[in-house]
Amino acid sequence: MSVKVVINGYGTIGKRVADAVAVQPDMEIAGVAKTRPNFEARMAIDKGFPLYVLAGRESDFKNAGMEISGTVEDMLKAGDVVVDCPPGNVGAENKPMYDTAGIKAIWQGGEDHELAGISFNAHSNYDEAFGCDYARVVSCNTTGLSRIISTLDAAFGVEKVRATLCRRAADPGDVKRGPINAIIPELKMPSHHGPDVTTVLAHIDIDTVAIKVPTTLMHLHIVNMVLKQDCTSSDVIEVLGENSRVRFVGEGITSTAEIMELARDMNRPRSDMWENCVWEDSINVSERELYLFQAIHQESDVIPENIDCIRSMTENERDGARSIKKTNKAMGL
Ligand code: NAD
Image (cartoon, rainbow, N blue to C red; front, side, top):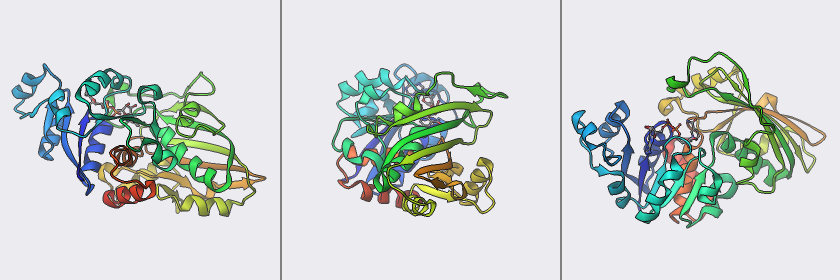
């Protein structure tokens, strides 16, 4: 069955999800919704995606010479599942509209867990979203943490996690937030990211602290974990190496800037790096205590997760590992 997917909110995340859906053999884009007739709306038209708009904005698009297929409400009638991608906290306002349309809905990490009731990460809890009507794909940071925690928990057991998140101040295209030249500590300690991980991995003891740093490229995590079983650094490398969404970096890569350069060299779309980038040389285990550095490309690590979430919710693939494989293959990951 080809699942008809519609995207409400065509910005950083929405346009990437649309492209990733379009290359899956078992899904198709039935529409994307834009608020304004800007260059991204033009690109959606050029890519052949049916363009829908917020009710009342039709004339803005007509005046800009952009052909539209109807309003967001019309779009919802064309889809089996809507991927909601407006800015954080806006998605919650859309729930009554999705309820009325009777369409399955996926929200993003900017919304609260309670809105959907199920928070999703493919390696951590694919089965939990199977056949459900609502789910939320957790944020970029939570996705990055959940991937490695669930993998190491399955292999060795995780007693506790303590992580420091150095967060990018803004996305590269987000000129509204810049220019920025400061380091901003998040004064709420521990930060909200730890509890967010427990929305997908309820049994994990995790605390996080966060600072914002003046970069737009990636987040960087300093992770400390106490494992339940004795193991060596090589054991951890072997286990993480089996996770297709973890990429080891080294060979002269000393910074997030060089990871982005690598993504460009790989001809990745938009120079996206979908995997967690773990510095192999940073992996160090002593007396069950593990340390590592990982970099997370905030604009793109959640994209394959959205695809797996669609497959789980629409019952298009029962097995999480098989869905991950299909998604990776189609995206070139
Ligand atoms: P964005 O600002 O880049 O894009 C949002 C888009 O939605 C814009 O095109 C905007 O015009 C449009 N929009 C605004 N109001 C709308 C409405 N009422 N209905 C439909 N569209 C509307 O935002 P983003 O970075 O793509 O974030 C989307 C969601 O993904 C948020 O929940 C965010 O927290 C989450 N997220 C973002 C990142 C990231 O780094 N950018 C990473 C992971 C998760």
